[in-house]
Length: 88
Image (tube, rainbow, N blue to C red):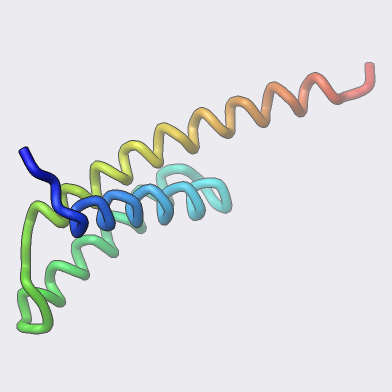
């Protein structure tokens, strides 16, 4: 199966949006914003401004899932370091 560069770009953007927003606010905010952006992009394409492809949406959301997991892991690691650096 050949995965085109367009799908990889969608995946990477999904990861980036989810991680940045998820670390800044809450993990679910990042995931939700990524879903909204991915959906809006496909609606924009359907209205004649691009080539609509639900696999683009799927690739973006797969990136969001990976990004969500990364945010949860990063928050857990930062929490461990915060507790270790506190004075008794």
